[in-house]
Length: 434
Image (cartoon, rainbow, N blue to C red; front, side):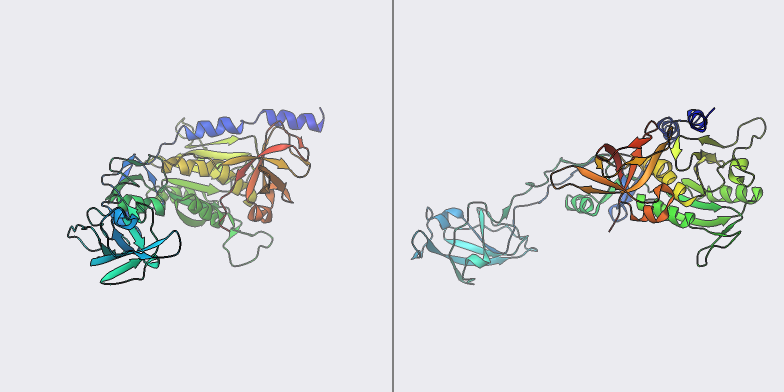
């Protein structure tokens, strides 16, 4: 049998990524909802639809600083006095200013023909007023004002409920609570909303070889980049992320650490030890059969490149979900995107759980391992005439520099062994704040 045939046979024994993800995500449920004060709701996902209890604006109000008037007095169809000739095709109107209204004014007032009120933006409109003349269109008079330009009827006026009427659906369940949505809720009189809490995610790095940051790696020691990167990745999704640090390859120590973390975690992520080598303790410990029962975590060889070995299960009496990712940094970050990120979104009740994707034209010819679904760092750009182009970054999926520069992950299916320049491929869009 040739090397190619051996590789294809091995790939055929792997679990397709789509099948694996489906089996994992079906075991997860969104976290129980909480009723939160509006000031704490940002960053969470709504657990139920939200309907406006009150209108916005709540009353007729001025939209600009100026003079609230009756349009018929300005147009000449009313009984306003003091018309003066102006340039051809225009005229000046003089109105009596009978009072001032600010945003804190509350007594109802009424306009009489030929009069107006000086108003600030946000002030309640006098009864019968149907236009606000901006200050800059007048001589800014105090007892009387001359108006040099006549606005259209309704200019400068915001009617009650014209933007958000009472009973309007403001947001559906599954919507992310943004700062603007907080403003909408507050403006319509909402002080509490029912949301899914942000998942609490604990990240644990495992391995006797690991040392903490602040030094360089040397033979027998590897700086722990993974737990820092994965904690940041979990926070980017919106989780409350906690880095526990490094756990040695000690069976009792690992069991005890995971048991302790179940008290404060909705999801635990481990990195390292998912393979079948003699030093891969995470897999040996968490998949071990006890009392005739399978271990709490199942490890699966998935048709994924990089990093085929992934683990998923539950730990502790509370059956907290645990995701086990490879120890190689590039594979750990790709594994997070593929498995942990959708799991966090599902726990948070967010929709959709996967990143958005586009179809893009490939700028250079590439090869890909057959039988594996590859996720390769790339730079995606919009074309001036529409559509997207994608440029694979050098070094492939294992390079941290490529992942740091990428704004997309190019996805090459299991049957793709080569993709020619000019062909169309799928690209996941990464959320980079640059």
